[in-house]
Image (cartoon, rainbow, N blue to C red; front, side):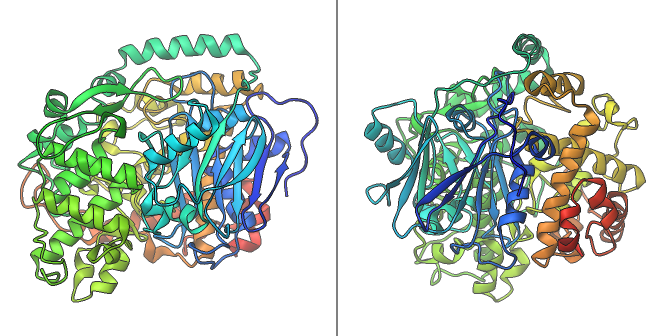
Amino acid sequence: MPEKKPSIKPFGYNGKILHVDLSNKTWHVEEPSEKWYRTYVGGSSMASYYLLKELKPGVDPLSAENVLVFACSVLTGAPLSGFNRFTVAAKSPLSHGFGETEAGGFWGPELKFSGFDGIVIKGRADKPVYLWINQGKVEIRDAAHLWGKDNWQTKEIIREEHGDKRIRMVSIGQAGENLVRFANVQHEMAHFNGRTGMGAVMGAKNLKAIAVRGKGKMILADAEKVREIGRWHNERIKSHPSNINLTKFGTTFQVSVLNHTGMLPTHNFRDGVFAGAHKINEVTYHDTIFHSRGTCYACSVKCKREVSKDDGKYLLDLRHGGPEYETLGTLGSMCEIDDLAAIAKGNQICGLTGMDTVAAGCVVAFAMECYEKGILTKEDTGGKAIRFGNADAMIWLLEQMAIRKGIGKTLSEGVKRAAEIIGNGADRYAFHIKGSELPAHDGRGKTAMAMGYALSATGADHVECPHDTAFAANISPLNPVGLLDTVEPLINDYNKVRYFSIGQRVWGINNCYGICNFCSVPIHAMDFDHLVKTVNAVTGWQTSLFEIMKVSERSITMSRVFNNREGFGPEDDRVIRRWHEGFKEGALKDKPIDRDSFRKVIDLYYEVSGWNAEGSPTTGKLIDLNLDWLIEEAV
């Protein structure tokens, strides 16, 4: 275990990790050293450390033996746009491998202000409970009255119980309680730790919510410097093109961009162009259902969308959040649904019941294609015609999955397991990587992103890898990390491997340090120079870009070791069958990913990363990253 920290109050972080054993209803506080914090920092890196230390290989993800980690970072809660994210991690019920997911909002800073940098949860309560953390005081409270309630009801009841509307909480809805394998963890009906089934892990532990109230303040090494950087950052956000778009439209503008470039996933990844895209794009969104902008702690970007509709077939409650791009893609174009109100309604159902909209939409599209191919019939679906374009069928399937009823029980297992249950060739249309459904981006148009999907320890994850198209014309934002040549999005070559290898570590910075991709390097307003200055001003560490990149590489390597010991190997580092097939129309017509060349760049990536031919980090690489304690694990 980490050596104990000295008694001197640290800058930026609290130096306290809360450990909770739900089986015994006990808890204790660990106080790691500054060296430990500087090595693991927070977020996905801190989570990886605890999963490797505390979790035995081979355990059932839905058993009491799984370990659930909530991890902030040394920067979480700094008064800067985007510095508010936290990680939730455990062994994934979907992949049976490394599970990790990030979210912004207000909960992470509130946990920091309450006195803790992270929470490590073991065991299973014998009945429903919620964790109450108030100014460093911890209670495990009865949640029998909350079980069966949706996420909005849970939030309102807990706040009323304590007489404090400023309590922040993460919670699960009925989907998490029912162990839907892609259940998520939600906060404020607008922020979601969406991927890899962390809500199901909470449900399996009988943990309904973690409610937090903190009135402490973050002690900064150089508060005036942080304020100076904050002023610079917010002014740059106002003029930075990508941030201007996010403020104006949120992520919804990506519908138009990806449809135009032939990369909008449509008809269960069969197509890249959707005829109804104009009905669900940013213009229609803001002309019809848009109400107002939401934001996260201390963030001036305000990319969140809040929607409202009080007439017609699909009523939308302003309090229950609005869909972002990923949902428009998965519940929309993937299912060939162009009814924006229906998509927004599906999003709100997922928010209330606690389901990841990425996975849920992919599962619905899978079911629709199985119905189209005659693999599923009305006998299987209770008489429902679950055809592409049928918005009512999409809504119905979401409701059925959340309560695991009828065909929804099978589909709640995710596409990989559902296909195994259905049989009759259903696996040909069950698209996943390492058991995890794919976000709404098509790798046929950006092959480095496809490498990211293939190589991510969590399976397909669009926020953990570089996107080629952003640097096809201008590579200058990545010059400080040694990338000087622009990228060809459709080509797999040495340059692509170099770009991806370095780019993956760049993207990993944000997951380790708890920073939003929409505010930070390399695409958005925060640049590398100011990021280094920020870490120094918050912590007083005098760090460098080299050290920051090593933190990210260490995190990537730890998650790889986790998967290696769970039995994952090179055969799992792949993309879906359809990406090796050409589109029939659009800008990418007849331009599939070549299977052989893709395998070669994956193998070359192993070599560049210091991994052996089986995809396991070498002893030398582990020593390089100060991970010699993992040598026996990696052998």
